Length: 220
Image 1 (cartoon, rainbow, N blue to C red):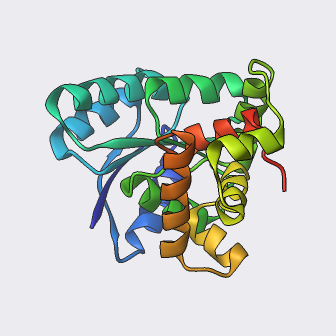
Image 2: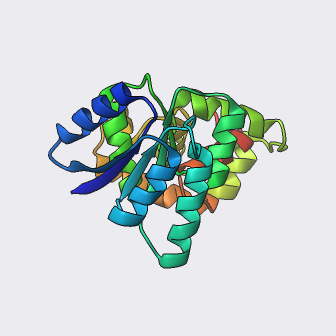
């Protein structure tokens, strides 16, 4: 079972998220917080696999709560990862959350299955990004970094056509399950392509891979 702590300052949202998560066979809610301070305390108490974190909350906001959780996990070797779930897609908030140590960023208007798969993805060590958040993050990054030619990037990295295709879908914000459905392959095959691609381009996760693709203008 994947153990989850929820943090949101709206009671209706908390109840809805908890009900959605509890309706699955592989996820369980071990704590529900009304603000970042409560979320931090619940993570300390329950050591969940994933903390689903709103950003705008009283007492301690989601960014500072994420920073505190990540810092404590680094010190004691804990395994809690933070998935931001918010209404905001502006790049300042995205940057702040990712810099604080969140490994995923989804928006509250996402389909329920996207959220559930996002929690599972975080527990697997992946970094789900909402497509709108990904576009804002990548657009900002592309303005800072010069981009070599597509052919040079491919030659340097040695990506296969399928690996390049999978990476482009990562940029669109698709999760492994969605990529598998789009390409007509299995999730295991998607993971294999990603693992190989990460090694070739020298990155560790989906966020870094998406930034690499944007910098190198990896077109179809």
